Image 1 (cartoon, rainbow, N blue to C red):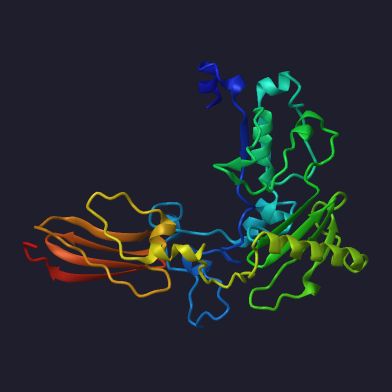
Image 2: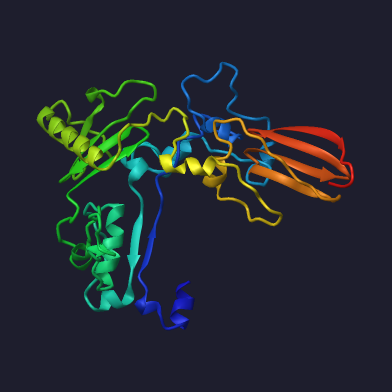
Length: 343
């Protein structure tokens, strides 16, 4: 990529940001699974005979006939030295690598090479890029005042390694796990699904001296715990966090207006596959009916939804109609008999 930019003469004009989504995940459970979606269900009321794995030849792992998940110990190892993993608000779930490169900015003193230890947050990236490009974010659009951005530019930190953080406090929430950062102190929870939300969940760390969140200071600083927990609640209410989800497996709706995505839909031959969230709204937590209109005879798939982790396919092979249903990696097939010619 950089070679191409250099060949085009645009490398100096290009700011490159490298980062990642979240920490390694613990969703595979203690021993991992060869059935990602069955292990992914973390509902506290699962039936007693629920099997979070399938009998799949380990030699198929990594290929198109399996959808696996490593044991959570590997997720923990991936995040070392930070605690826990994706889904948690401890550092193992939210702290990620971040590299920014801009040759011309370095030459012009806008970017001093080196490592930064200042706290910054993902919402800071957009205002920082605008600042480096010399652009101002408009205050209004088409006569409407725009909502204030959450992020704060950290261009001063890029130029000066000793500059203070421009982002002094930040709330965080993920499936009921919460945290609040302010000036080096971090209040954090490890919420157990299915249990009440309780102030006793809070732990307090000074991540300036304890970045791996080992030494809990909550008992020593109850005043600060109260102050930061109240700040978390105020920020959460301001940002629409409530009602808190519990990570119990219920599939959230993003917005009441999305009920329209559940209306009947016609897919014409050659239609590209639907985006996965869009297609999930047609079938998630509801009964549904699919009507396939076939004109003439032919071979191949009439309709399918899913992948090797789960789903179904209705297809014609050797003139016969077949239904295949993939139950979390266990395949069930039905031969519906010859498909008569004509409509």
